[in-house]
Length: 238
Length: 238
Image 1 (spheres, rainbow over the protein chains, first blue to last red):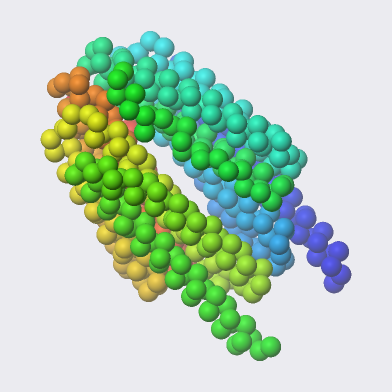
Image 2: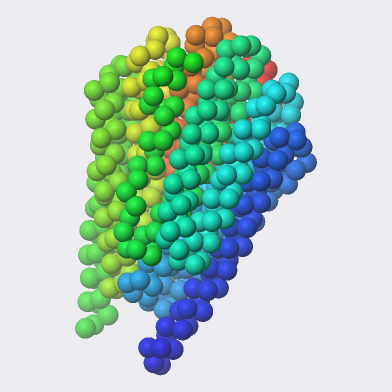
């Protein structure tokens, strides 16, 4: 068994598992958009489909993890190849978490449709979700094409999502102070906004792994710091 | 080089990395308690220590991941041994996330000390945090002792944390409706409560991995379902 033979068997294995990552990524992108759409149009049926669809995403993550463990056991990859397999496992973990957030968003939609509508609240959330979905698409493209520049662009765009989140945080606080009947629905909107912001963090984590994979260097960003609502006292002045 | 020699080298490597996991676990347990304590006593200095301490936790995760990759590359472990190494990586990932939540809690404490105090709000949170810290301690003990029963007990106890979370969610909503000036501080308390609840989910994930490691079977719990605030319409009736 020549080294070349082993290498190409590894490449075939890796390609198969990367195809599963792309499939998983497609499902997660759709879950993000559908969850935001069902919230905006108060469509309970669509929300239910998102909730149920999370099982397929979870199942794919399990398959990918098993396949990666099999590749490691069978091919005993070293250095860069091992790093590739471990990155695949991490990316599937990130995708699974994003899917969970979309499911949670759909759950809250089922509650929110039973409450009075708050004009405009879901529009900003839909825009945030759309941004995150496009970031995810680009992060996965960057992974497949080993494109560090595109991955860096994704990391940069997460700041915009964080800024949108800070804006809706303030917007919802205002609604709550205006009318106590807005408090309960706005709590749910808040958690949804926070979940979308966290989706962005997981997409950023995928993009950072791509940068590391391609350049060997970790982009030194403190991703936490852009959520000023947790540390900026000015929020209390709203 | 006999098989026995390879096996014992692997065991030594694994023990070293497990010692790092226990060290990391100790730091995370302390971060949880200190974050809750600083919130309850409105102690900004202690909160600052928790925030800064997260760097040591992150650094340990990185070391553990590198060491695990080195073990896989060097020892090419198969089957159960490989599963052990991958579990170590997952546990260190869970610990890192819990540390992040403790850091976020400390950040919000720095904001909350600048607002009027809400009587009793931090007491329930402190109890939740204490429960999660004890669960984490037991989950790590269960890992080291390969004790599936103790791990199952931890999984069960997460339901209690979820129930506490549901109770404080309702409590905070009431505070907000009573007085609009409570809205902003209660938003922060809410996010802290949600973060503690998520810490519990990560501890549960560690315990589930222990059960899987020891018994080869995944405990079939839907961990999400205990947070009824995202799906139970009755919350809207508060």
